[in-house]
Image 1 (cartoon, rainbow, N blue to C red):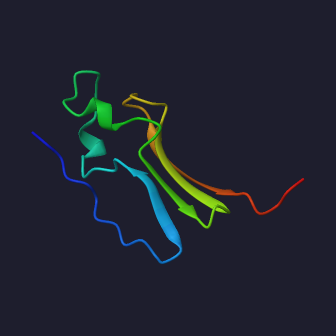
Image 2: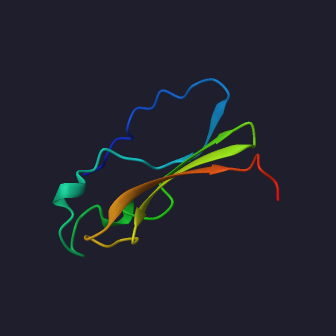
Amino acid sequence: MSTKLVPLRVPSGWKVRFNEFTETDSDSFANDDYEHLWEFKEDILQLEYEEKRTLDLGWYPEFNPEGKYKLLLIDSTNKI
């Protein structure tokens, strides 16, 4: 069984660096035998805005049924 990508509406200025965010049901991921286990990894979706901001979606801990989706916004505009 193949899964479809989640439809995205990406605002102007943002670009998709990679997208493997599928419509897989995370509530069905109960053990290591799950058919779509490979879809629950750390690197699922990454968007970039003018090389200043990165939006990163992943599953943490990777391949773990106890994990959760985590969405991070990385802001590179403040230099130290």
